[in-house]
Amino acid sequence: MQKKETYTRADTLRGMLTPLRTCYDINYYHLDVKFDIDNKSISGSNLFKFTATQNFTKLQFDLYENLAVNKVVYKGKDLTFTREANAVFVTFPKAITKGSKDEFTVFYGGKPTVAKRAPWDGGVVFTTDSLGKPWLATACQGAGASIWWPTKDHQSDEVDSMLISISVTKGLKDVSNGRLRKTTEMPDGYTKFDWFVANPINNYDVAANIGDYTHFADTYDGEKGKLTLDYWVLPYNAEKAKAQFGRDVKRMLQAFENWFGPYPWYEDGYKLVETPHLGMEHQSAVAYGNKYRNGYLGRDLSGTGRGLNWDFIIVHESGHEWFGNNITSKDIADMWIHESFTNYSESLFIEAFYGKPAAREYLQGLRRIIQNDIPIIGPYNVNKEGSGDMYPKGANLLNTVRTLINDDAKWRGILRGLNKTFYHKTVTTQQVVDYINKESGMKLTPVFDQYLRYTKIPVLDVKFENGKAMTKWTADVPNFNMPVKVRVKGGEYQFIKPTTTFTTVNLPGVTKDNFEVDMAGFYIKVKTE
Image (cartoon, rainbow, N blue to C red; front, side, top):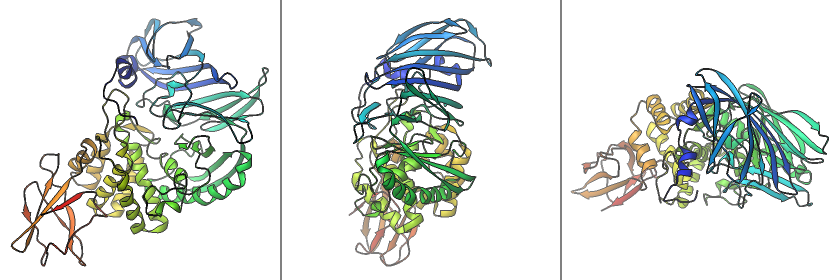
């Protein structure tokens, strides 16, 4: 989330979809990696199985330049490759033809980037638990999965399925995404854990979590049947985990399946894995580091107290299973699709168990941390997200859209419809907005544009002349004309339709002292003359 004003060729190589990346569609990975904890190093391989989308002789995959590519093997022979920044370019001995399926394997190793402040910076966390036993985790959103394993590191192409094999020092366990297929005692004293992911997964979700874990399990009767719930925690935290997870996981699933549709990964199950960092939405293996406290590390980000009744990391990071993991933005510039909906999901969780007024109070409280510094949508093709306002401001945008639609059943249908229509897909902002426009029957593009593409929020100018109220919008979007709810104090709210020039409000008995705007439903500024 660090600001950046200038971009290099390395940023373009990472963020741009060039013909060297679009020429192949990833079908399957087998990532096979050994962690040498004492030396903070890794070594291993990744098998790329792909379908050619066009004829080509050269392609790009990605691996941070501090990790060595030892060789790239194709049909039993080493391929020629070159490197530039964190990109690797492989040349094949003859053309790969469009529509053909093929594969190659990358062998690599070295000392991966050590995360200094995971999950906000990327890399591997090397630490110990409170008993001094090794405890490792990967977290790489933004920085990219290529910070620790070779991959086609672009969100637009999710692998269809994946085998994750992690070898660790004997006595430790690895917990990764999907389901545990096999555990093998290796002759070198290591133990290999094979985890299989049966569903598409984005690169940054792929995780290794290594420690002295203990396991307990449960099930949830959900919309698609019985969902397995698996919990991996440090042994001395097991009782706290059973209480905390037992209270919040099933009611989270109940709320989100109601609002968003079935949990998207029944085949791979639901897991919470205790980690030495705060948390991350690692698909089917959600990283949990909130220390078994309610709120966000014991705090309520809204300042209202509404966030202290539930565990923020369980609710927020699990909300990403629908928005971020099920529906993934093609470009990280559109990361609001992940974070705005998921931040908003916190209020839907509150609404499910504490009522709609409490949920709206929470959303209003979150406004205190909005910066309105830069646009929420970031620059495209350079692997850069926009403002951190995508969390609280994005959530308040969605609450505003819900208020405009003015039909909670329809709104719920739209949220469920998004997850069904874009099930296991990657999307753009335009696709999401177009879908909401179509299903709502409203032209909401100017509203999304104002909040996502500009820094300022719209200002409702109000003035009183000759016993009448007049309103107009001041906004960046040309001819901005968002309806808004107003009332005479104590009365019922009704919609008015201001434009960018002053028009009279039809509100009998209105005065400067009794004119009220629905500020719980709309994130706007009101300026009264």
